[in-house]
Length: 195
Image 1: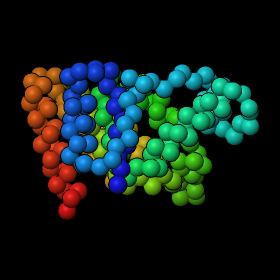
Image 2: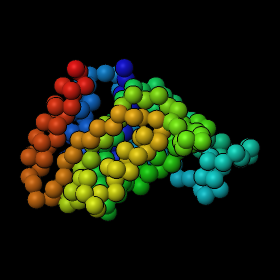
Image 3: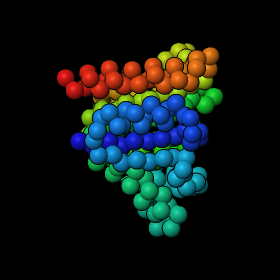
């Protein structure tokens, strides 16, 4: 069993999603592949290369080959994992741009999913995903939350059928209360997964 842990909060210190995500990873106590999309951002991609990565381009253009190699490496990290931990804040009602770039890199037809007569089918074989979402004022799961539901959809799109949510939201709450609540949710989930 192994974990792919993705961080995307711009706040490196005192980030609820980072603190609770790390607590979760520690509690799961399995080998971890860590990818921090803020401290090691993915390189920019041109419109031409984006089309090439998601198309059937046979171009030998150096920039396209570099982007394809990166996409393949990110998908390989998923393939080597049983559990995906996505730790993210909500920015302007959605996910950070760095996390969206990661999503765009790992969602590739014929590689991470395929289209069938019954709709898309995921190909990656990751057992479960746990989405840790932090928000200042947007209620997680509410009408203005375009992050947690989107990430669940993406997970199912690439074939991760078990998706769990840990939430830390509310700008009126004290940070220590939000962290304590998130850790309680983690403890409960880990106990459930152990049974």
